[in-house]
Amino acid sequence: GWLDPDEPDNAARTVELMKLRYVVLTSVDRDDLPDGGAGHYAACIRAIKRRNPETAVEALAPDFQGVLADVETVVGAGLEVFAQNIETVRRLTHPVRDPRAGYDRTLEVLRHAKRYRPAVLTKSSLMLGLGETDEEIEATLRDLRAAGVDIVTLGQYLRPTVNHLPVERFVTPAQFDSLRRYALESGFLECVSGPLVRSSYRAEQALNRNNAGLDNARLAGTGP
Image (tube, rainbow, N blue to C red; front, side):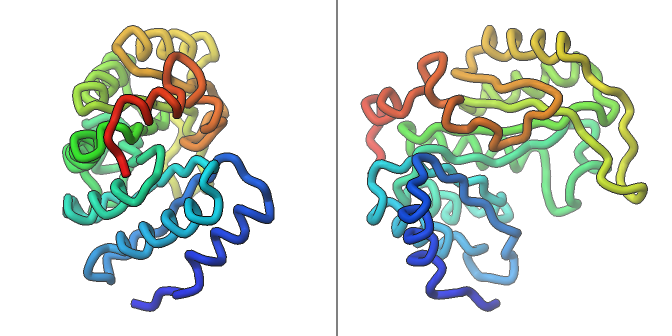
């Protein structure tokens, strides 16, 4: 498959021109490439960091089909946060997620990222309102925490079109607050939880609360 060789430098210049302090990089799945696009992803991260050393970088990455060497390529590129979204509870994974994705694969990718670079914060996200129970949400939070995930976001699923899954319930703000408390009590460094929250919502602020600051991460680990 084709890749834009100028994208790393263009991305770095854009970050510089916009004076961004925090950048979230994401991508489509590139299963057509031998490394799933991991090398290009890492090149973009390195270019941004070279030109903007004070800018924090988060990669909201695909699962690279579970190839852990490709995960290492991205996690080892000098970023601060590695994110891979679990999206929903185990029972609803098949109807909700792309059939190529998997609940346990996501957990393994996140677990490996944390083991490979302990200084890199790991992050995941769930959409609520798809028919899951509160008990299933709590079980998923426990699974994520057991995989070493540091930060989790919880938001309301909204149906994009009539061709998508219907909304089964609207979670109240009070319920979102309760789930945030549960997540923090379970050991997450931060949980951003609310009806309009998405995986990158207030991402920089999430790192600066509840001891999830970048300085703590850099001091604690041995990243590049």
